[in-house]
Image 1 (cartoon, rainbow, N blue to C red):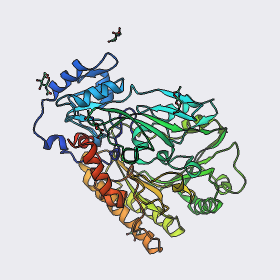
Image 2: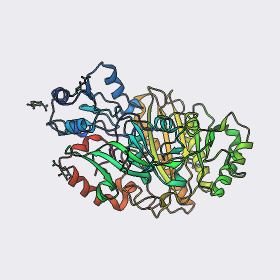
Image 3: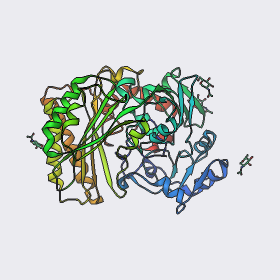
Image 4: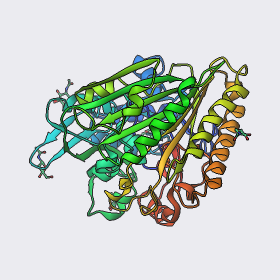
Length: 477
Ligand SMILES: *[C@@H]1O[C@H](CO)[C@@H](O)[C@H](O)[C@H]1NC(C)=O
Ligand SMILES: *[C@@H]1O[C@H](CO)[C@@H](O)[C@H](O)[C@H]1NC(C)=O
Ligand SMILES: *[C@@H]1O[C@H](CO)[C@@H](O)[C@H](O)[C@H]1NC(C)=O
Ligand SMILES: *[C@@H]1O[C@H](CO)[C@@H](O)[C@H](O)[C@H]1NC(C)=O
Ligand SMILES: *[C@@H]1O[C@H](CO)[C@@H](O)[C@H](O)[C@H]1NC(C)=O
């Protein structure tokens, strides 16, 4: 999912689901990026640094999770203080060639890796988290403190993009999305002003415009947890379906589940299940089905939250892989919809087998408690919190750039087929929001942000009249 180290802007989070090759940067008048890089280098403090091609840090700052979203920048800059971020965006030429996002740029790549502090504020019941961290680093820092925050579910997920997109966590059925657990954002506005935004600043809190340097997260008590990864072969599909249905009936917000239907040529599909309970042992019933099925691999145990996270597969796949996500959300997962997920995995897996040596397909069900969206104030996403929806993620990975169009087209088709299966079952999908962190780049804004779009457009005009942040890639207002 998200790449560590690079800052996320609000609504610029589609990660790999990115951006057309001809970015806004190229549509603008040509800019002398190297001169901009030199100007930045001269203006920033010694806490920050500019790196040029061939420097190791330049390579690290430009590395993207999937090569399909890589482009080489003129330089990278690692600001070390909010003041230097402010200097960078305020420089002539600076703002117009920056890319503080997950997409690629030919201008200046900003890496936020130096914003890497985790600070517990026990009197306030909050934790300050630098925007350059990954969630596993945050959990590691909190290990042993008895508290935790609501963040990413697998190793390697970056704090900034995950949070600004919404943030579905192992703890979300209990405490809501990650954005519902933000007490404050430290932000550098597009005009260079450094500010701390809280719920009182309604507009900016609703539509973060600028570069986030620090998140202040509400903390929750955390003891031992139970969970891990289990892999089943295709032969167990009916037993797994029965186990999912038992889980869905359990209705315990401390319990969470991710089910992935996966395909690697030549098949057949296999199923990876990630189970979680916020306690040392789950009550009987909820996960019993999963425990009794014969499996290919079993890694479930009790222990610390950080050890549970570290035992899960990382979000970064093999380097050299091209990949795209797409998103679809369902108010419920009836058996016919689960069957459609299984059928899509197998049908597309078999259809695409032979086309690409690096083929890997994964369809994910993410069931949550009905109360999921009741924990936070209105936010850009999800547009309407009265509509309960569970995000599903479809991930296609491949090796050959020549297959980009075929794979992206297949992703569209398979998403449409799942949508049709939901409708056929009588699900009302008309206003169910699509999760922007998983959505393909051409997803209509209406599908994610609905009735919030006019307000978001107005706020963009107000806080970013010069369109500085347009170069961050991702969804635009
Ligand atoms: C960095 O700059 C500060 C003030 O500008 C100075 O006091 C400090 O010695 C410098 N540190 C290094 C390592 O150059
Ligand atoms: C770099 O700074 C110089 C001196 O301030 C200025 O004349 C020039 O336009 C700047 N270059 C860019 C590309 O911003
Ligand atoms: C803890 O948070 C409170 C409330 O926001 C704040 O006033 C205080 O300065 C913070 N303490 C530290 C050490 O940051
Ligand atoms: C399986 O999926 C394919 C591709 O979407 C579709 O054409 C076919 O009708 C589906 N089969 C069933 C039994 O639903
Ligand atoms: C920067 O933008 C903010 C928000 O629009 C505004 O309040 C502030 O006055 C601006 N600062 C400058 C120096 O223009």
